[in-house]
Amino acid sequence: DTGVSQDPRHKITKRGQNVTFRCDPISEHNRLYWYRQTLGQGPEFLTYFQNEAQLEKSRLLSDRFSAERPKGSFSTLEIQRTEQGDSAMYLCASSLALVGSEQYFGPGTRLTVT
Amino acid sequence: DQQVKQNSPSLSVQEGRISILNCDYTNSMFDYFLWYKKYPAEGPTFLISISSIKDKNEDGRFTVFLNKSAKHLSLHIVPSQPGDSAVYFCAADKLAGGTSYGKLTFGQGTILTVHP
Image (tube, rainbow over all chains, first blue to last red; front, side, top):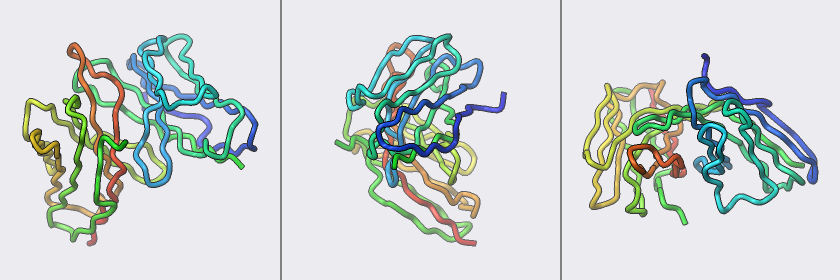
């Protein structure tokens, strides 16, 4: 396994369009996380899954955002009716659900909303 | 509110010298701390971590110190190498029932530049 992969790496969309990103975690990892990072800031937690269950969603996350992990493997993050403020790097990470199990990050999907 | 803060946006160090990166936190519920390194166009990669029951953890050239009473941690890199030039993030987690809570709270990052 070569690590966490994300697709696409870059996405440019017009305001109001829907976008969907995919994340493939490390295969034996049962936890999967989504973060968002804007310029000059650290990653900000959005949501995470343990297996297929979504265990937490940031209260800052708009209802336009939805994430799924249907079979406990890959995950998708959808943003509906995109706004310019959604422009950011969207990072996916995976880990085991164990103390001391660090999160392994993918390269991210850079979203630009014009 | 910024629960994890890295007050130095950047740090410049000569090769071979020590790099010290600092991080402060406000939430006393945090009990596990991590440092990540990030190169351009890549996701963050894990460097080193420390549990709140310890005050020091060492891994090769990297040492993390935790001062719980001051809610402060630092990362020491000795000796610094040009390949260490990257953005460094500290992050904090809560443990629940022997597992990670799962939600890392990151600082803003410090850009480290190591000059040859």
